[in-house]
Image 1 (cartoon, helix red, strand yellow):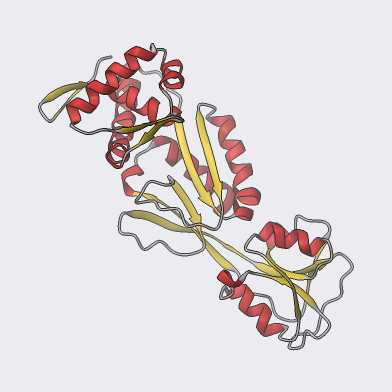
Image 2 (cartoon, helix red, strand yellow; image 1 turned 120 degrees about the horizontal axis):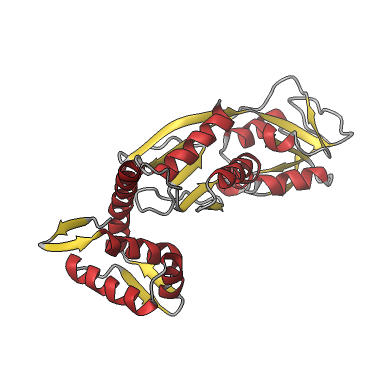
Amino acid sequence: MIIQFCMIGFPMDWSDLRIFLAIAREGTLGAAARKIGQSQPTMGRRLRTLETALGQALFQRTADGFVLTDEGTAVLRHAERIEEEAIALERHVSGVEMHLDGLLRLSSSDWFGTVMLSPVIAAFGKRHPRVTVELLTDARLYSLPRREADLVFRIKPFDEPEVISRKLLHVPYALYGKKGSKSPRAGDGRGVRVVTMNAEFAEMPDALWLKRTLPNAEIASRSNNRQAQAEFCACGAGLAVLPRPLGDRDRRLVALDIGAAPPGRDTFVGYHRDLRRLARLRALLDLVIERLAG
C-alpha cells in the first residue's frame, strides 16, 4: 500500500518517513537498511530527499552514527503518529492483525525500575517481541517535553502542560535492619547506626523522618541509591528506611517496629500528549496499570 502526504508543496511517501524512523531507532544507515530490507545507498538517498522536502537537517552525522537534531526530534513525534495511523489503515484494509513494533524509552528510579518495572517489561516483551523497551534508571529527572524518555515514573507530580499523567500507586516504606536486629527506641537513637540519603536528597520525607525519629543515631553511610542502601543494611552497616517492595523481598533484612511507620510515597507516571495514540506505549502502560495499580 502506497500512502502519500503533502508537506511544504512536496509529495512525500510514507516509505520516506518509514526510512527516517528506522534510522532514528537504529542509529546507523547499515542497521536501518537491514531492519527494513533496503540497500544502504537507497536509505541515504531517500533520507536526503526527505530532508530536502522538509528544508531541515534531521540528523547529525557523527563517527558513531546518526544523532537526531532538534528539528529531527520534532519530526520524530509527528512521524510516529503517522506510523500508527498508517498501520491502523493497513490493518483495517487487510483485516490482518499486525504486530506492534519500535522502541520505547522508560525512566524511573533505580529500585523501582529493578523491582517493580522489570517483571512487567519482561511480560510485555513476551506479548510484543518486536517492541524494544529501554529502561533508564538514575536520579536524574528525564524530560518528556524534550523527548528524553517516552514514559516516566517518578515520585513528584508532573506540572508540564504538555504531559499527560496519573497517580500510579502508593508505596509504603519501613525501617529495616539486618536479620536479627532489635528495634531501637523511637525518639532516641543513641548507639544506633543508620544508612540514609546523601545531602542532595536530605529533605526527602523518609530521611527527615529518620532524623526526627532517631535524632542521636550515628550516620554510617549515605547514598542516593536505594538498592545500595539495602545492601549496606543487609551487610550490617546500619538501619535504613526502604520502600517495602524492595526491603521485603530481601531475606537478609527484617522490618522493625518502633511504634510509627515512616511516610510512604506516591508514584506518578507521565508521557507527552503527542504520544497518547502511540499503540505500543498504550499497550505497555495498560499492562503497567494492570500489574501495579490493579
